[in-house]
Length: 189
Image (tube, rainbow, N blue to C red; front, side, top):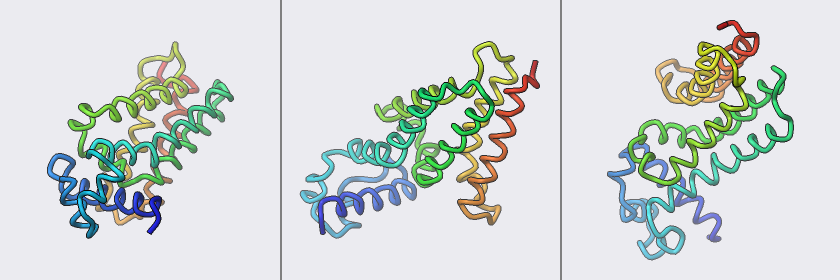
């Protein structure tokens, strides 16, 4: 198996175990056992659990999120359509990382302690800065903030709805677009 495939397999198993047991209760030894490899083989790819979590974020969320931010910096979203495009792009980004988004919400205390948590937080605030106007009424600022968090939380809070991940992502995007549209039109003034 190539290094890239092994790395991906480690990430997949680790994310599954982190989701089932939590970050703190999952050891590198358990990940290695689940994979059927030695700890040395695992350490070749990731020296610590933090390295492993960081790689998950970099591969699944941070890189794609940085692409959304780069797009926004180029297009300077002052129009409603540009703001909605940011939401659509970000929705696709996190839609491809649903298990990691769940991990983020279920391990918030851990993420506050890891450097990757601060990096993700900075990106969310950067995106929020593109969505809300500086002089927006407080209710419109709340709408923009709620738009981003709706897209995050809906991916895992509606498990009992029977809807699939893509249906939940689309529904959350629709609500987020409504919130940003209302904020853009100044409905909270």
